Length: 65
Image (cartoon, rainbow, N blue to C red):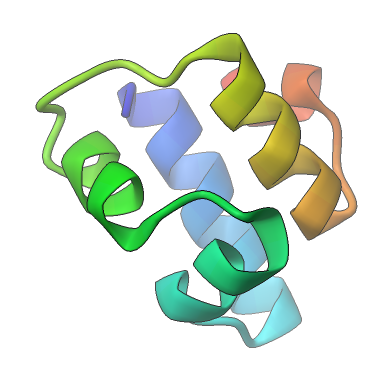
């Protein structure tokens, strides 16, 4: 996950009091994908960004800025 995206996701998770596991369950994005994004093993797809943003009550734009 890009540094900006990771920071924004981390901030939103903290604000909601959620774990990455909860994000996975709420968004339908697998834990494998979330952890690979954290480790910068791969970039998020547009579909993944949309699912995570929706689950977090945010927008894709807010995640990537």
